[in-house]
Length: 354
Image 1: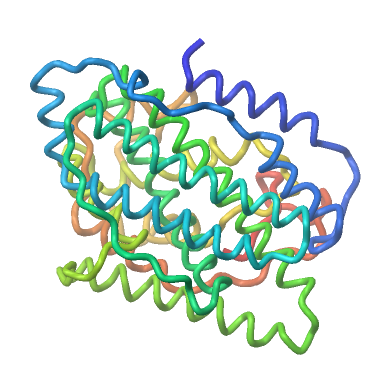
Image 2 (image 1 turned 45 degrees about the horizontal axis):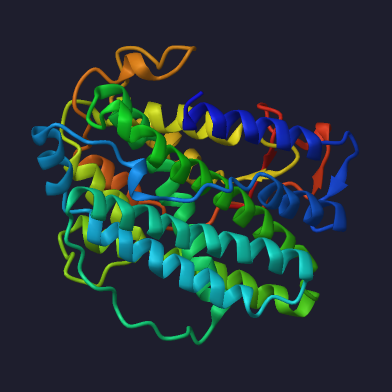
């Protein structure tokens, strides 16, 4: 059993243990327990090591190490770990604090995965930027969380398309799969924390909190639009990694086909968790809207058994996809208030507010 199968099987088994049939209200103790325990109880205790990375043919190794994304990826994970840890240190609720601390640990472990890749294949990584504690840890946490909601959606599709096309050879899939699977858990935790936080704040603090959420979306939108316009000389942030990776994976797939793969992978990866939990909905909604009105229709949808048939060549997106990413600049409407069968979406899952 490879790592991909192990991660999926372990997640399914442990998630089933969390599931009960009772309804709950978003923001309730039951909701908090479920989204925190989902993250904590699906923890994968792997230890990254240089041995995880197999020997590669010289041509494949040269292609992999030539990608200009590794410094950005390392700095992204390091910054995410520090921001999440800073907020965990300020969290008051013991269970929420424990879950956020685990989130920070896993972000740091992603950095360790990339460090071992660099050691295995002789990559020279640039030193990270000096770190200063954020003035507002909650703001920093939300920048990371909402940024990951955007980036993970596209990363799910890019990873699947790269896997199917052979851009990533099979021996490289397993170490990366663990990281991608954990990012799915992180965004699921974040959007449920956001829904819980909205409902547990005193009423007089909620307007300011909503203004903060809007502010984060505006910052993320401006970052993406500036990069899409070519102004990419700014320091590395989480938001830049997906766009850069997309540009580097070639040009075999059309934008519409790639968006179909992103949508299918997002549904597959998040669909295994309790349907009462909120899902990130804003990015998929915007992509479906763009897919319907602006992007040409794919010749065929991804097959029911997976997305391999949709990835016939080297993976890539054009600037149209960068524009789609740049359009993620506004929060969606507030989701359902009670998690019960009559309030779920057509897929059986609670609609979220991000």
